[in-house]
Image (cartoon, chains in turn blue, green):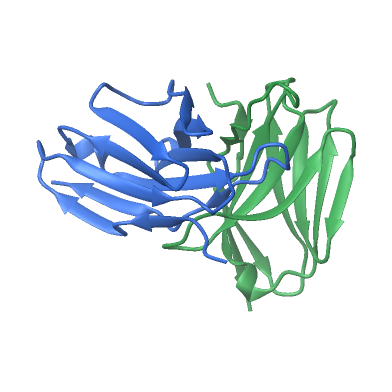
Amino acid sequence: DAGVIQSPRHEVTEMGQEVTLRCKPISGHNSLFWYRQTMMRGLELLIYFNNNVPIDDSGMPEDRFSAKMPNASFSTLKIQPSEPRDSAVYFCASTRTGGSYEQYFGPGTRLTVT
Amino acid sequence: DQQVKQNSPSLSVQEGRISILNCDYTNSMFDYFLWYKKYPAEGPTFLISISSIKDKNEDGRFTVFLNKSAKHLSLHIVPSQPGDSAVYFCAASGPSGAGSYQLTFGKGTKLSVIP
């Protein structure tokens, strides 16, 4: 079975550019989570969706960040405009609600903003 | 305000010995706890979990202990193997039944198992 798929794996962009990160959750999972990992703050939840609906976006740092889930098999996290402090590894994870709390993570996207 | 704390950023253990990774939490509403393992350039992978109705859960070489009164849990790996070298994250969720499946993570402990 395919796990959570994220693209791109690496992204290098210049400050001010728009960045779009993509995620395909595991088939049959109905909750999707976006995390950001930095040395200073560790692994922090940005936003999560349940049945394609955003439930909690309190972790989204600024209005420059937005996330969408147009259908059960695809989500995007967009940063516009990007800034050097957005450099981090961004993870997507999914789970099936009603079961355990175990979340399955993708391999992450390493974002570098110069 | 960190609700889940892993106070040891790193730990080195000899192969074959026991590795003990610790985690403390402050939110008394947490009632389900998980450990994840992360290799470089990969996403975290689930290792073992425990519900607050238990104080111990074992899976092969991995055992998680929960002390609710102290708000403390630990992961024991016996015997430790070089392949166990990774960053270990403690995570917590709850309250169960509230409809939230969010996890709150600690900052991780890097375990190095020396051959």
